[in-house]
Image (cartoon, rainbow, N blue to C red; front, side, top):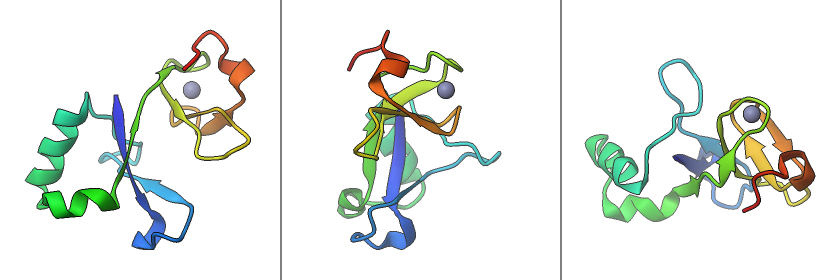
Length: 98
Ligand SMILES: [Zn+2]
């Protein structure tokens, strides 16, 4: 699974990312980069826009809620889960090493 992130407000010096949401306000997951590219092109983005996006690929499954697990953007954490809306230390998700 892949999620699409962009710097908050499109300002690249801002370390925060915001993630593409679905109609219900939950982070939208894509099944692989082909699906991501198809979606972005459908929505009017071109290859030139791609470097402004950050694509995160899932690296496991959340032990707590079963949602896809992604690398954390915070240096002190190993993983983040959009299902739990939380960051986790490596040992908290230890059954799913990167
Ligand atoms: Zn979770």
